[in-house]
Length: 292
Image (cartoon, rainbow, N blue to C red; front, side):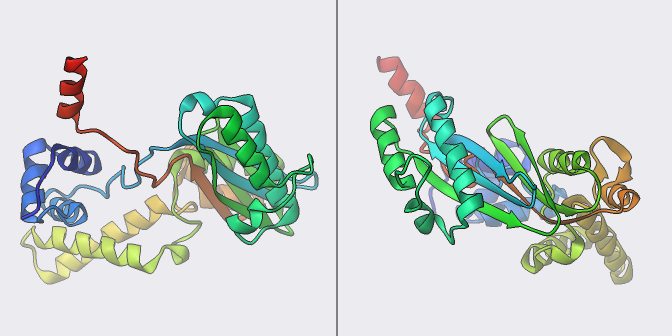
């Protein structure tokens, strides 16, 4: 049987919002498989999918660039080790230069990006290495996205930790900025229900079916319950189905229709999303501190 650590229980509590003993029991029954334990708890409790499925751990910034004609835009994430370096001017300027290079030179991947030249004449990799030497931390260009469209681009940066790039058609520039801000706040998975990943939808249907079956109601009623929950879920995770953050009485779909506009694509980056930070067991951390 797998060892159930305090950190595993803590992680599961963050994912489900349930009590410590419930989480520990679920982990024991799932033989330490956190995902299986989460699914089991959701079935039993009716809890929503974990809010903290992606651990936000690494430091760094999200930077953006949009061309003067607003037809091309780029978003990049550059990571470092500490928040201190993330606030450094040289580090932030490097991230902005990388975003501009992505928009203007259209690299295929991070490897191709690393050999591209900046305005200084140095490659991105040479500049990165120079910053590592100067700032004393590991620095990495983690990911980027580039949109180019007959429509127009909008960007929203929440400080330097969250960035959203939107490709849209129709409407004014202010509409694009409002949509980008809405995405940062409401975090939709995709634009419309047709774009919801099949595996994600299948998983939610499986969970809802198991939850509804617990009610003991007839199969036809269970089916209606599941379809109702799926409809609600699709409204929650799709951009057009969500209530507009600045006017919750109106969905984003209705807002776009009223402006004769549509969103073609969007991308949101959150610094450190999906990166696990090295952590010390809390009890061990306290014990170590007591010895100092």
